[in-house]
Image 1: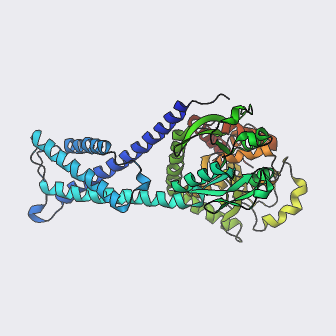
Image 2: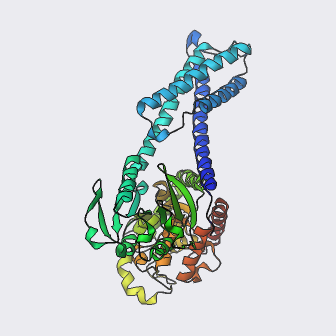
Image 3: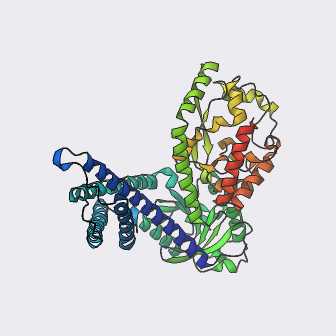
Length: 490
């Protein structure tokens, strides 16, 4: 695949930042509109002479003026830059700037447009409500972002190849960024270097011969080559291994990648600025950062709305499970493997008898699926009636909406496998872990999906990763709805 130009990466980064800015703007405008409408109703309902409003001014026009003015003020002040890094004091200052300057401009506009009947008391209430709502909204967002940045899901695990000056420099840059990186350790070419400290407590944990075992047994999001590639024997073999698994590769200059004549067969090659250092990246997943952010927003918003709307439906399913199988919990949780090998608890409505896991060994000889997966028709462990209905309609998967809200899953993506299945994967099959797992996926909407071989499942998952786009996700979601209606599950 041809390398992407630096302009492409810069354009994607700009699109991502523009999207974040628009999301902040809509957030603030929404709260400001609520503050103005709230101030109107508070003024109307105040007791005695303080209550009521003059009917002369058109409050819809005034509200439109507020929206336009607040939009321009927030845009010109550029208060959304480096939002995550802001302190409590910075937050207060930003909110007061927006509300104060906005109010001054609004009063000036009301004066020059000769709209003088708007109550000054109402405007005072509006100012107080606006400051309060903006501050609460931004504080909540900042708190959630800080919590997310410290969560295990957002810890970015890095393995560094090298142990000399260039590797020490990479460790220094990463530690200085304070952006949730975790350096697993360093690898080098010589055994006598194992155990030595490179910098800041980071040690050499093995040689290049240990690379495969480390990236298969641990959560690794990125491998950084911080040593001359010409010093690594069979470097193209190691790079191919990492690429096939789907882990991002970053190369610190001196650009000896051309000397090994390595051409990625799966990954995209592009250039990136890593804290001021130009680096080369090989990535097997999409570089469309803006679209990936939109995907995340859609995931969280949809899951939150569906969880709220489906609560009565969840309760009805829970009652039915208890009626047909009084023993055991309503929800079934099971350890699964997510993005780049992260393990998490997946939730489902229980469709099997409580001791289903214990009975699995007795049924393994009936397995109809190829590869490490297990599947049989008319599984005797399934709860009569309700268990069959939930599996046929795939409604047993609905509790995974909570996994989406926890950031462990997405609406669309490769289905999360069991750890016991991942252990049996071939190296090329590990690349399906390079994207966040999903509630539904390409193979689940494929014709005769229950007859697909394990190899075909893998191929469809990799096809999804290689061709990912937002329209593809929408297409899969639409086709999933048809599958649910058609009760094609097992």
